[in-house]
Amino acid sequence: MRRLAGPVAVLTGALVLTGCGSDDAKAQLSVGSAYMPQPVSDMAAGFLDIANKGGAKDELTSVTSDVGPVSVHETVGQAMEEVKSLDVPAHGQLVFKSGGNHLMFDKLKHTLKQGDNVTVKLHFAKSGPLTVEMPVKSATYNPTTGH
Amino acid sequence: MRKKTFAAAALLAAATLTLSACGSGDDGNSPVAVVSEDTATQAATVLDTPFEKPDLVLTDTHGKKYDFRAETKGRPTLIYFGYTHCPDICPLTMNNIAVAKKSLPKAEQDKLLVVFVTTDPARDTASELGKWLKGIDTQFVGLTGDFATIQAGARTLGISIEPTTKDKNGKLVSVHGTQVVAFSPKTNGGYLLYGQDTTVDDYTKDLPKIIKGETP
Image (tube, rainbow over all chains, first blue to last red; front, side, top):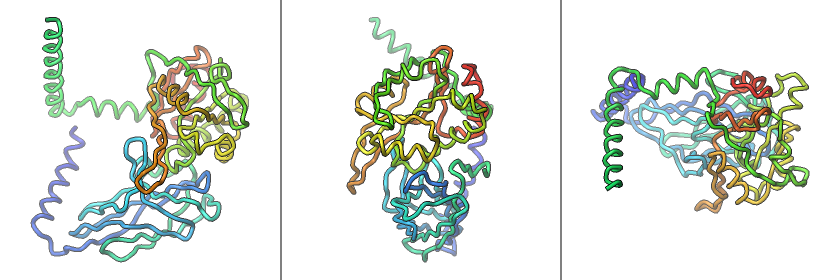
């Protein structure tokens, strides 16, 4: 309970700040922690964080890659649903992680192995596209432990 | 009259729960925190009343009839319900078990049965399932068959799955189970549950115990 109180307070603070009208009312996006677990078949998941330092929200509208079609999925309960876009909140982040939101790669053109790199382009409603090098990690890679 | 007493008691119970929930906020000793601390050191949920093995007679990846109860009798067994068109949790769960299994001595690897039951039998035919599992561990057993049978079997383990549906774009959406159940070779009971955030290390630590039917 106590642990929760901290971030909530911080969040509220951030919201208040935004509400007060910040000068930089534009999204400032950056991407981190991108990885793809080595796929079993011609289908794969991709994970990353999109941080927004700016004072306005943006939306991730589509993702493209030369390895095959990519769609954006949200996990709802035990099923996953394709979504058209996901918000990147002002002063916040959009997180893709195992068990939650993920990028879904379908019909991969060739087999991807640990050590490969996948180039992914993220398209947004307002900001320009971002190109990300997504390393292929082991099939059991866990970003919190790093292996 | 009896019903009324019951309702009153329930109300009282609810009030007590609310009260205790409020109270725990102040002392920083909330039950939620305790649970998360427990899972950090111990991945398995040990069941006081183990599950009976589900009565699943399905088809394996060679297209042969597979009677789950008969085939797994007296063997340390893990079961998971998932589907192959699942990019995230299903392959992660199976790969976590596969990697942990490799750290066991060869004889123990051969004892352990890992059974993947599809929740999407229409797409996961015996051969599709075989192809997918071969990419994870050649010893894993894959089962497919009638969805109603699979759903009923999962339900006896407290695992709820739904049939594959089409979303508004016409794409197929399937559902996977959230738990791996481990069965003891000694009692044949399903005595341990593992959630989807169980890591390779957790399984590596627990598999030697499961092989012996011990509680990790």
